[in-house]
Amino acid sequence: MLGASYNNNNGSESVSTPAIPVENKLPLNSGSEAACVSLNMRKGGPRSSLYELCKRMKWAVPDFQLAEQERLPQTTRFVFRVVLHIPNREKLLVQGDKRIDKNSAKDSAALLMLHELEKQGLCFMKQ
Image (cartoon, rainbow, N blue to C red; front, side, top):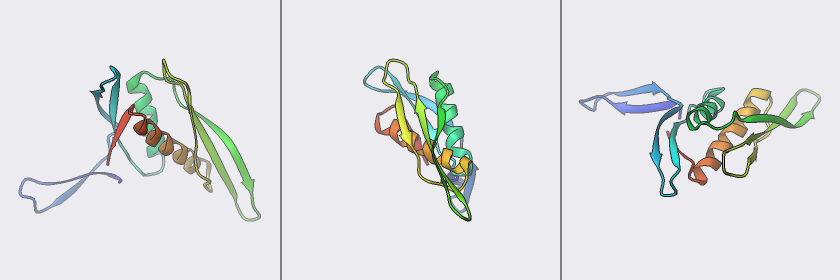
C-alpha cells in the first residue's frame, strides 16, 4: 500500500514507486467526475491524498476537528473527525479511530473519508 508496484519489461524485477495522490478524473454517469486517488499509507499520506483530491476537485479544504482526547496514566489517545463541504451536496462528516498521536488520528479520519468518498462514487482509490 505504500505506492505502486510494477514489473519491468522482462517481468523479472518488481519496482516500487511512490504514490501519486491524485492522477486523473473519470466521468461518471451522473455528470460529475470522480478522481483516481493513489493511497500512500506512510504517516501523513492519507491527509495529503485527501488535500490533493479536494484541490483537484475544487472543493473546500477538509476541516479536521478533535473529537475526543483520552488521558491515560502513560499516554494520551486522540480521535479526530473530518468535515468536508462538497458543492451541491450535504457536508460529509467522518470520525476516525483512536490513535496515540494527533497526526495518526488525523490520518485515520482522512482514510475513512477517502473510503466514504469512494463509496459515494466521488473518487476511486488505486493501490
